[in-house]
Length: 272
Image (tube, rainbow, N blue to C red; front, side, top):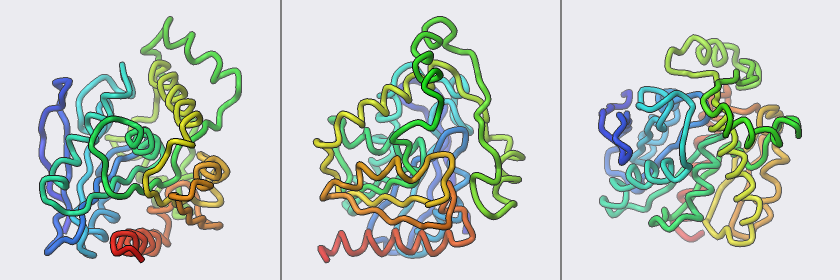
């Protein structure tokens, strides 16, 4: 069955939509953090597959995206997202179940940097095509801090094409037809993301979260080479899918990818 959803309020006082795929007799809890431009509703298939396997699964719309409040694709401070993550991990913590934090693309960067925060941490982390570097021209990255100070709320289009998301044309068509997908990014938001990428780049030696990375070998939005360095950590295991694109979960093979994630979670929690 599809997710149920609730409307609440974040610590910053804006509306927040949360989703729940309830599992019968769950053996672990998962929180999914969505990527740039999108929203939690794009994880219906993934959330249901996880719930069917006994993982009580939740997600939420990041501030500035989807049905949550806040200026579109705009953020004053990255810690706002860490607070959202922690508050949405709370049901899993309160349940006493092992808790897993999972983030896709930008959500992968949110999840990875969350592990470096002072918040209570989940048992496991799953990073799907994580934004650990930026596939943008050097001049654009250099100009971002200046533009964010002068024109922080100027919105620039995201250079994403439907065929980059999945080999299934229906995925790209649905993405651009989705009224909750916001395909522009403010200069302030972009600058903050670049800062966080740099923060992660300087923190790999301190990264000790037990982590699974899943990445498509044909990802042209966040190339697979961007996750190679983190995958060198002894506590990180990477699954590379050579023929899949950016949204491995939304590829035709998505259910098999989810099954791989569930199998890894089960083995990690069982200590095998």
